[in-house]
Length: 475
Image 1 (cartoon, rainbow, N blue to C red):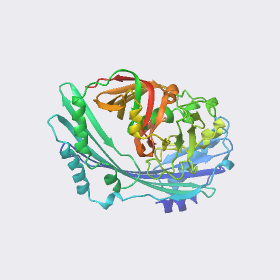
Image 2: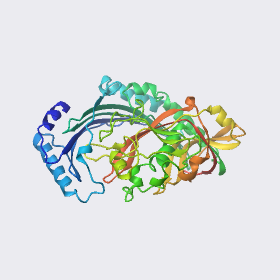
Image 3: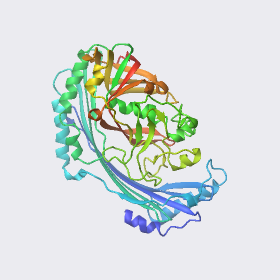
């Protein structure tokens, strides 16, 4: 299909000085076993293209699933009409001569989804469910695998051509234990890029029994204490902390007001960049779509901007926002290759990709030893944050009480709250490379119409001081 589209695109015509085509083809498959019963597989195949036209001052786009020459030309005609109609009324005056013409290619990595039989994959899932059946108190056992392949093509009438392919195999599982009115859950997920070889490397094998044991430990554990104390966040919870209180506040279209009606605004303002102390001097945050292992890695964003690692926060000082090429032009600020779309029928908007906290110098034992009284927390279970991405409250599945520099036992229903504007300044210690882990989420929502997209977040363990910790009861 990409080769045929390249030929067809050369035959299209528009009165606009610049036009482009962005083609996306996705195949998704979902396999799952609940209790000891295989659920029906889900298979989806989706493909289409978005045509964009840029005139002197205006821009328009139109998406279509009709990939014939006539269908593509009709979409380009409509995009051109919108470009002409918006010439004098756009927030930003578009310059068709400044549009890039990128060229490059990115190949998918890892074992293809068809290299193993579905019976074999279902057996792997069933084994984890079976191994989780270690007590009558275990009331829910679930294991699943999401397989996902994507092919993208970006063409411009000025000679640009970018081809990218992506492959994902994402295992996940959860186990619930119940006693009376108390239900405790432990879950596992490994959202990274790669093929079926990811299953063995992810830690999924053996997760059923481990999750069941931890769920039972939580049932027997005391409640998390309440008070102001130290908080040691492990990387799988740091993932959400980074996502909600750094990633979303730094999205430049949100800062410019574009998302107020739906996803909210930001406490960050354009004047903060270069001077604002976002965190302690230990906080270094990068945006790096070039890392091959993370789930949101790519060579070019969906506007054709080459991916590169950039620093958003260095030694606690805010340096640049998460803004794609258009938002950068509007705001007069540097940004990143951050224009991303969830599919062929959505326009690229400013989104996170791989947003990471860089490793520090502290070993985990050293961090625990520095805590007089505090709680270690893993694995998010609930979250809430205000429309400005400032005040937040997060709950975790797993907690461990730390007293006088030692782990004192498991605690359940651990929660904490704070404000983005001050929480990161309380960062006391940052874990070294031995504590560093890669995580990700597949479902970050934003935009009108909504776009659910995947984001990667890598981080070491991090220790914060003077945090409001409390017990959030869950039944």
